[in-house]
Image (cartoon, rainbow, N blue to C red; front, side, top):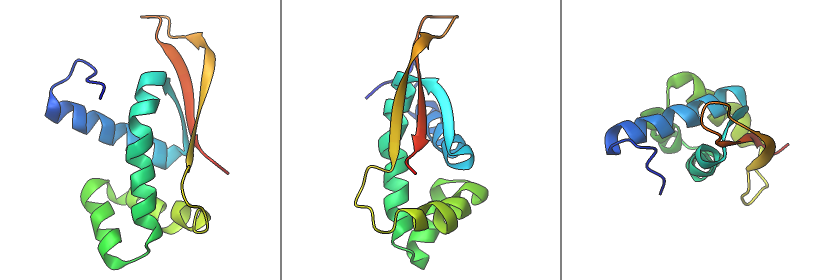
Length: 111
């Protein structure tokens, strides 16, 4: 588990916000470490949304903002109804971040 130099609460919120941004835009560019950390979180959300039940919808609403929970439940989950897993892909970029040299990556939903 990567800590990102944050304590437990702020780190959990940070990962949740990254997951929210990924769900809303469906593709984000970030560092490889961040992409590897949010991948299992978002894939778990997609698995929950695929159940298409009231309980799963409420579970998503408790973890995500309303806009991204609705998009995940009504749009994204329906795309992956027949897929068993592997909803996201991480594409490593050749470039690095100027500020600290962290390797960059693009994380996106598989079409």
